[in-house]
Image (cartoon, rainbow, N blue to C red; front, side, top):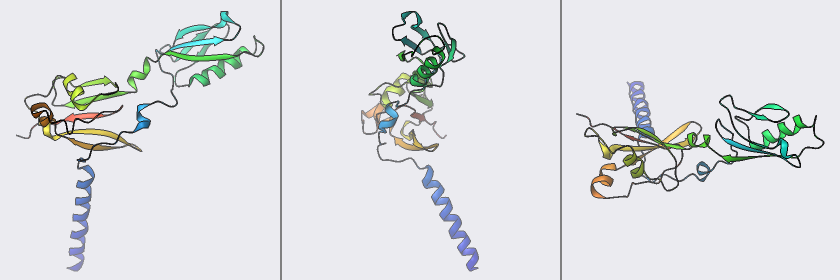
Length: 207
């Protein structure tokens, strides 16, 4: 009998712990400064690159990154750029040019970061008019993205809205958002500022 009671207590402990793990936090989400900036940008498809070879204007070129991730540089042909840093690409071009140019000095500059838009987005899902994925803009809030999604539907349960934010190591943290109070009462207490990668989910009512 004692073993049975202990087993029941352990089971209840596990259940309570599991529930606690998925309960959205009522505290404001912390802003992760690292998520606001890209410290080591990797070149993507459709980015525009300026390749400059010092004292060799004929070898300097402004080119977009093709769908295969490559760019074409005069004299040496195709160079892999997708997934690399500008410094990596400059080093490859420099090495290839050594066969033609004495001590080439190469600089690769990103002039248009077109692919970055897909790395820094916020998303709205659930009971909204038009679920959307939006490019992140500084100053964005929960209300901004919900309005961009056309607002909530008549089946929504807005005060059970949750904001999901990346918490590291593949985990995410949920934060409770009182969207109904924001929309109907102008109570902006949970109109949290967003950061890249955030997901706002508006659930449906339980009938």
